[in-house]
Image (cartoon, rainbow, N blue to C red; front, side, top):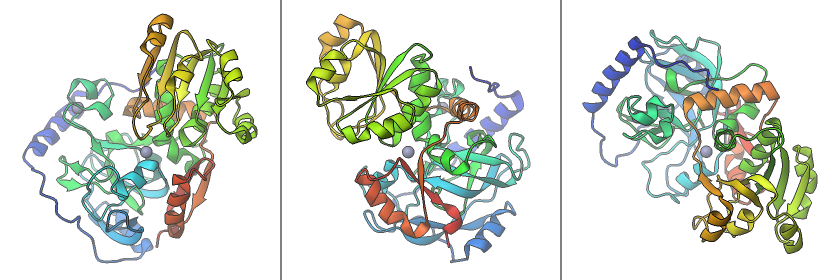
Length: 401
Ligand code: ZN
Ligand code: ZN
């Protein structure tokens, strides 16, 4: 399915050079991330277009759990393989909140979140061939990896054996700097981690596809979902609503499994053909053995065996939600007796993310979003944590000042 060609010999040579460079730099200790002298957003965007080292106007936290503050951060000069992106939109992901509130451990501060980035190419390094100034592009969860290990060569950069580099809050050993995310006027990213955004898609609605979209697309594809398949999606939030849209676009008959009967109208609007109430024991018993695939996008604790019982023999449960205590105890006899698969999935590699964007363009799939201004980010985070969004927030980066 993938239309991405293997790297050319010259590209591989360039990558080796970069890996050698990386080996010579070591990560400093838990120091503060640098900030730059304040500038206006217009000045920052103009400076980004030069391709030189420049400031970016951003929103980030200076203390874990603190409010988002206006920051000015330094961005590196484009090296020969870099793309400078003028950010238009950045999706708000639960991961941003977990990281900024210290729920996933300590972080070097200040921290600028954001790993669902869409914008225009403002400048390119001298050796960049895949993208040109003015192109609309995207950046997801990973911005670098070793490019040489088995996982990287298979296009599974998120499983890089040497460790992939996250888009924010990670040590980028290839550039000897700590990454800062897309709640900012610009980002600088190596061209092989920059995706093409098809022109037919609404750019704001593309942003969450780069995390939530690929998270649901990848396992649905691996499960071979297509016409004639019955797919159940459990949990109708940011991930779940995209799972419904994508599975419908793949040709499947989709049912939403929810505890909330009020979601029926939304499920129908997203293309689902029915709703199953997981609290209705009779309805769940009647649905036993009905589905080829169940997507479990529930972020709260729940009994996964209820969903396993709804699978046909040989069916697969795709685990994409992350309940706080992990998945509840699995009834192994259910797996064995019915030959079921329990499949975990984490985002997707760069080639598959491009394939997902092209698929969404072909089928007119976009995220259902609510656009927010820079000043409304804190409130949007609170609402996201409360589950009060249909279905993802996206920052309008034009409001950064
Ligand atoms: Zn995310
Ligand atoms: Zn690797």
